[in-house]
Structures are given as structure tokens and as C-alpha cells.
Length: 390
Image (cartoon, rainbow, N blue to C red):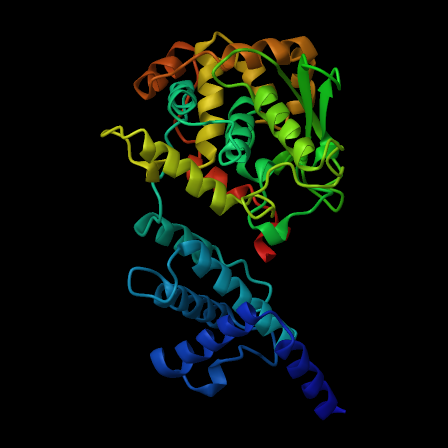
């Protein structure tokens, strides 16, 4: 019977994801070769409750393992990957032994060690620069912005900016991670009126973070209304051109309701990496000597939209509501009604902000910035567990 238990455990480990098995191999290599602790220290199993000294020693070994994996000389390029491998090692340990490493012990030092490694070896700037209306003006003036080549990218960037979308609300992390019940499909895009030139578009998004917790987290959908206008940024116009182009490709029939709205050149769902590559290419295309495209990410659209709203005179409470920034969102939405959403979306799309204005705008509106998490941290926190698995 003991042999059967051992075989079943080994079988479950063998059938785990390749990444989990790879992480476990790194752990064995570290214990045997780097730390030279011996085979007996691969599994941390105790007959009785381990003492505090033993648990602290196990935690120290995990921190040393994390440092061994870390940049600049380690096997992982980012601290996020290091943290994932530490977590996978603990999962594999539980699969094999039924016990976590340092069972029943909150490893605070490990958490702070991983956070500190992120500060020591940042893989991207701490904060993102905001996208501006001026960028969209330049792209529209010098590129075939709504052509077949750029239309999907244009619609994605304008929608992210004007609807204040988080990256995970705009596109999936990978094309494989696309899900019709979660990401943007044609069923969730409604033009009013449905024929002719629309007055506005209603886009139903699946929110992330505070409003997207629990087992039914993909069921909640929030409507975002955006007006048709002649503003430099007009997501309604971009989406309508995309819709008309797709109808033309299909011989005049409606796009399938569950088809992704935003797609790449090959017809697969437009994913984070592809859209980010295009966004940075477009920033480099502007050839502004003072701008480094690496300081921009898709969160720059959300930051830029909020800053443009601030310059347009929108009250901070309305910005907070439109951007879904707080756990008080449900009470704040009563202040941002349908017509407010259309009005402020139009004003936002016309308010160009110079990056140097941001600090003074925040001070003038009494918005504190001390002690808040960075834009990079916010962007990394947006993806759900489902996204991380893909």
C-alpha cells in the first residue's frame, strides 16, 4: 500500500505542468550542488511540529534559492519569475509530502526578500509615463491610422485611453488566454443607433481587481459609454471603422457575436505583448528625442486618460468613478451618470497634457501621491490567476 501511495504521488508530479517540474529540478540542483545540504534536505518533513529554529532555517533556504535564481546572474530574468518558481517549489513539495515547507508558518521574511529583490533588480521603470492626446494627433496626421494595418491597434489604444481601461480589461495576456466569456467580443459592443453613424457606443467590460474577486469573477460586466465626435481620440469612431471593415470582409454580414473585437494580422486575438510592441513602435515613430518608449506600457493609456480628465476640469470623484479605482465604486457610480460619461469622455479626448504638467495638476486638485504603489506594481497586479497559468 505504501508503494502505491508513492507511485501515485510520483505520477501526480510527473503529470504537472512542465514549469512546475522545471522549478522542482532547480530546487534539487540548488540543494545538492549550490547549498550542498544533501538529499535529506530536499524534502522538509518532520515527525512532529517543527521548531521555530527549523522553520526559520527552511525559510532561509528558500530565500537563498530565490537569490540564486535572481538577476543579474541567476536563471530568471525577472523577480516575478523568481517568485513564481519559489511558489511552484512549495506546491510540488506539498504534492510530494502533503506538507508545505515550514508548515503553518507565515514566511514574512521570504515575502520581504522577494519584494526587496524587485527593488534591487527592477526590470522596468518604477512608473509609466502617461500617453497624451498629442500622440494620437501625431499618429492620425502622419499614418493611415484607420487603415487595415493599424485599425485594430488604433481601436485598442483609443479604447484603453478613453475608457480608462486596465491592461487586463483591454486584452488577454496571451492569445491562448483569450476567453469569450471574459474578453472583448462583438456581442459586448453596441452602437446606438445600430445602423448609420452612431451617436455613441456601449462597451461592456469585465473589470479586474476589486470588482473581480471570487468564483464568479468573470460574470460581472460594466458598461462604458463613449461618444462619437471629431476629437483626436474617439474610441467610438475607431470601433465603428473596425466594425465596418469586418463587415466588408464578411461580405456584408454581421461579425460573429463571440469573435474577438481586437485581433492581430493573423486573425488571432490581439494580446498584451503584441499590442505593447505596437504601442512602443508608435512612440518611437514620433522620434521625440526626449522620450524613451521603454518608459511606456499599456498602463500609460489609463494614466494618460485620467490625467487628461483632470486637465479638462473633471472632479476627482468622477475620475475615480469612471476609472473604477476604489472599493467605494458602487456609491461613486451614482455621481457619474450616463450623460456625464459621454460628456467627460469627449472632453478628455480633447485635453492634451504635457508630462511636465502632471505634478502641478495633482497638487492643484489636492490629490496626494505619497505612499501609493507604483504604476508598474498596479499593472502587474491586474492579471488574474487564470492569466498567469497561460
